[in-house]
Length: 129
Image (cartoon, rainbow, N blue to C red):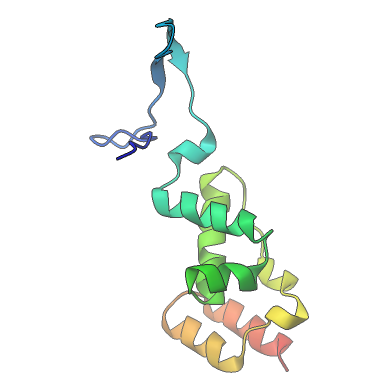
């Protein structure tokens, strides 16, 4: 089983850093304090989401299909990914292209599941009129 790099301490949840790198072939060892990438600090689920999002070139319908989730779930995960990578989120609901608009039923279901706020639901319903 391939081991995965931990980004956060399993005890206190603070960010970890690497202190030693070694070459299995020539036995060279480098000691120091090395930072991990922003992606290493993401949960495995968010890492998988990021890969699927990139694979689909940001196409929401493709992400929905590959992960078998709804638009609001993709949006929620994308917002979380943006935040965890240290960027501020933007209101992406304004960027929904014509073929990716949610149906009225989808919007109401997402609102009921608390995947979107009342304000976002209202905006989406107005856009669908």
